[in-house]
Length: 315
Image (cartoon, rainbow, N blue to C red):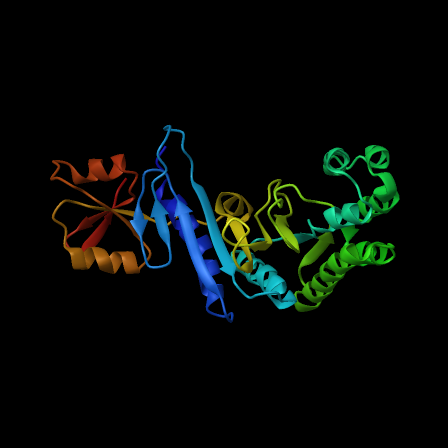
């Protein structure tokens, strides 16, 4: 199906929120992409591009932002801040962020000399939050990993539990990074609900440091996710960034009244049409003369019709 004008406008609204936040931050590069079925438009930093495929193709959209601020906790915090501010500006309520450190579990396992077959079984157990299976597959790391699994939750409780763990040197450094980011995010964004799940790695397999996912009250799916990684298939620069899923964000946004639609008969004055667009109307241009302009406006789901420089209501 071809998305409605209102769907395109809503996607643009999500992108604008991220784009506007961009101008308030330092040292950022920005890429914004929206994929919309059978529509293709390009601008300097934003785009709408065709999704070829079945007629059921839906709006498949994302807003991406990447920061190449190398090796700094500040960059991790900045990524969370920019994304949360953009979501809040769209009216998303009940916003929360879940922090994780996908490199922490591998570091613990290396410290315990856990071999690859056992690590794969352990990873499955952790993904399923199965403490008994963790005990069976975890070897020397089992007890620590069970406690790490149980530590997931709100910031205060989780940080206290994580800090109490006796970890090998490499894993302790990974924990320190997660703890530092969590504390500083809480200080910088006091209105943002923060949870910590230190063993979560699904969808973060290529990440190399602190990672995060956004959720909203009443919405089942993630609104976005991001974190630290290396560019160029893991061979390039250190970076941190995020992806926002605009189809999910639209579900989380408060309902709003659709803009009125104005039918422009073929040959209508371009200046008059531009004037009405500037006043909030969505214009639908007629491509050929028709005998009954009002009937054509109704067919195109327009509540108004341009007649010269004036508009008429269509019943």
